[in-house]
Length: 335
Image (tube, rainbow, N blue to C red; front, side):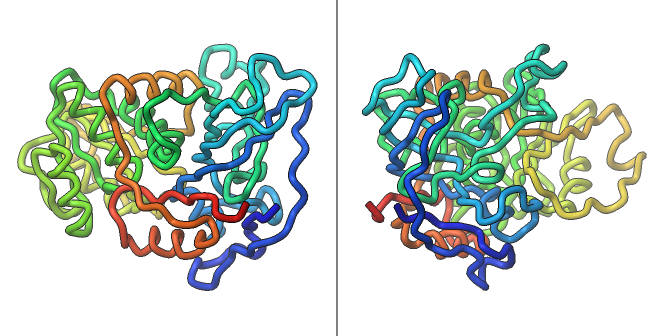
């Protein structure tokens, strides 16, 4: 099969991805072999390619928003059949026995492993996934539209929960890419007022089209104080900006896996009045199941820009440059 690999992490302008010929992977006893149909392009893939995240697997194949069909079963797998449509997401495996797993916080498991970082992901013709971590996908959503739901959607949902938005509250979204535009739809469906603060007129237009009450520059003041905010842009400079935009008792959740340095915070200006700053770490499988059900119920849909899988390099470059709104999705043209 053909698969992209991060051979030498570095700026995407220097093409750290290389298209290689590799054997079709053999699933482990508890795993599924998945024939990839589509794979979303996530900012985390960019961090892996550029080395912002430390190398965990030399020559790893990125991609963790995978939609495909089961092509093979490990010896111990039950409940799946060849031809079943499944989703493969970021969280790949946990130990299931640690304190965090036992209390329902498997996203904090010290032994957690991740698709496209610890194990080869979906920028390829085939990938594998432990059957216990595969998602059964709802009908009515095609492969391209479903792909961004599997990380952008799920992590946005986790961030929304961490932001503790009160019913009918005022939510600020800093950055408006693949994850934020799905989070916004869910928040709006649940009765929130959404203010978007982001660079680029295309993203601002999309925000307004989806129903945001306002869309302005990331460093601008929203038109009203915010009950909650989520920082999707990996820009540490925006942390104090977002904290200042919060009303008393407001919560800021930082959704990214990587963030540039945060400048010093002035307690009286940014944190006083019981404001809270929270991080978001991956997600649990329950988050994923909840989000996929809510997305189906409320008609949450990704704005997508398909690229042939053979153009993965260009998709990452366009993501970094902010050349599209919504989410890019790689469509398998290598088979």
